[in-house]
Length: 157
Image 1 (cartoon, helix red, strand yellow):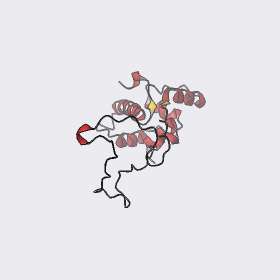
Image 2: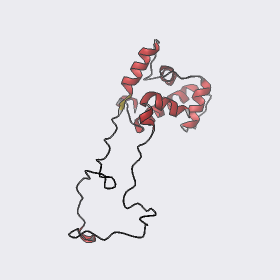
Image 3: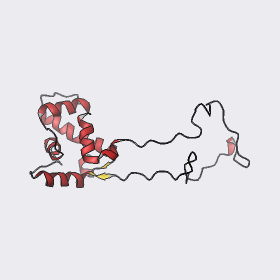
C-alpha cells in the first residue's frame, strides 16, 4: 500500500478509500446485450429530433433499487484535530506534513517523505526538504479533497 493510501485511509477511513462501484447500465454491451443492438423507442417516446430533458432517475433501471446515497464528505479538520488530541503531542497538522503524518501514527522520516513526494509527482530537489514539505502538504490537502475529504478552504490555496 502506498504512503498516500495509508494517509488517506487514516484520515478518510477505509470506506472512503474505495470508489463506489456502479452496476452496469442496461445499455452497456454484454453477452446478453451486444453493443450493436439498440432497443427500439417505446411508444410515445420522443424521436431523435425531439429528445427532451429526462426527469431524474428515481430507481436503478437494472435492479429497481433506489440509487445509493452519496457518501458524505469526511471533515478532515475534525479527524485530524482528534488525532492530535489522541497523540498527546503538540502537532500543527495544518502547516506541517511531518506533524500530519505523526498525528495519524505514521513514520514522518525524510525517507518516507521522499517516497511520498515520488508518489505525488514532486519534480523538485528532494534534498530541499522545506520546498518538498510545502509541496507535500499542499498536494496532500488537494488529494484528500479529491478523495472525499472536506478540507478547510484556506488549506487548498
